[in-house]
Amino acid sequence: MIATLTLLLSIAALCQFFFSYIRALLVAGAQQAISPSVLEACMLESANVTGADFHRLMLRAQLYSKGEGENSAVLAVRVYFSLVSLLRLAFGPLAPPLAHWFAQEQAACSRFALAGLNRRVLLRRCAAS
Image (tube, rainbow, N blue to C red; front, side, top):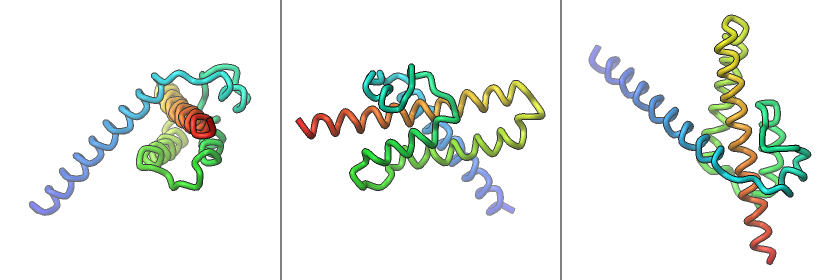
């Protein structure tokens, strides 16, 4: 009984840490300025992206990664995006306010991917100079 309670409390604490970490990553990504050349390369008119852009932006970011593996932040945002997508499919049709929140969270993940792509493009340009 005590072991089960300890396990449940540990899982709850881990989930709380995970969501706090994700929120910090998404806020940091939203605050970064995006280069006009990156927007043009991604065929975007502005940095306002939607959840539908996430996979395309992540693929482009991988092209600029120099064969490095994903870092923990990118992996965490991918997991979070997948979780939000599953929840949106399950609960979005039942409650429109939840569907709107899910769409906002997916857009925040896409904005994080765009900021990561921007950072990698700028680093590559600096290295080439």
